Amino acid sequence: MKEYLEEQGRQVDAALKESMERLASVVGPGLAAPVSQGVLSGGKRIRPILFLAAYSETGGMSSHAPALAASLELIHAYSLVHDDLPCMDDAELRRGEPTVHRVHGVEEAVLAGAALIPAAFLQLRWACRRMGSTSQEQARLVALLSQASGAPGMVGGQLLDLLGEGQKLEAEALGELHARKTGALLRASLEMGGVAAGASGPVVRALREFGTALGLAFQITDDVLDATSSSATLGKNPSDGMLDKSTYVRLHGVDGARTRARETLGEALAALDRTDLKAPRLRQLAMFMVERER
Ligand code: GRG
Image (tube, rainbow, N blue to C red; front, side, top):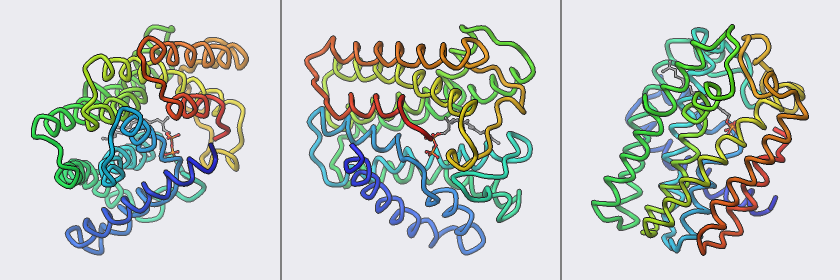
């Protein structure tokens, strides 16, 4: 698994570097540095890796798939740059380094994050052309990425998160918040893998169900890590307690949240069991996402 993650990560990083070179030539030196820091500062690359696993395990064969996968990481990178801003989580550290606004300034970080959103869609279009995707596939991919990243997904989830600070959210409200804030982009990574590979409707639906449960399991694990890990391991300062956020650890305790994460992982795997999709890599990735240490 370690070698697989490293190899997939290298392919994604190569596609991201190429994407950053193209972007640097249009954004100019003032924004190239903060944009690059946001994108190329490491991270697990879990969304593009999920895309690539779903793509290959549903029959996709194009060597340009990492370029399409990169579009998901560009959206993820923008969300982290903006999430760290003083008006959001006001974070000092991300991936073991000072955050983009601490290094380059708040205005530059706002603009760098904003530049990454259209860049992600241009990256998607660029990759689709190289992969020979049909116009119908391209339209579905654009719709999936838009819904996952916009108000119905990540941005709407972030609003629920801000509104929920200082309140005790119950399981249902917390579930909706995370299904949108974190779950939507993870789920879209899987669905987009299936769509790009030309997978059948039932297979894409199974990926969607798998992604829905996996997104939740990933977030519960995130809450456990925030409550139990150090800044050195996480590469960021644990912040849920300080920001008075509702979390699964608050609802169930650390052990209860760990149990809930494993149960939800079981629900994710069961969604794959209901199809004839064996998908060993997706299963391994799902287990890694719940057992991870950072
Ligand atoms: C528009 C100003 C403005 C703000 C919006 C959209 C948004 C900011 C924030 C989205 C919230 C968000 C950052 C969700 C993701 C939560 C999460 C679990 C992040 C960590 O993901 P990992 O563990 O991180 O994959 P790495 O570093 O490995 O990439």
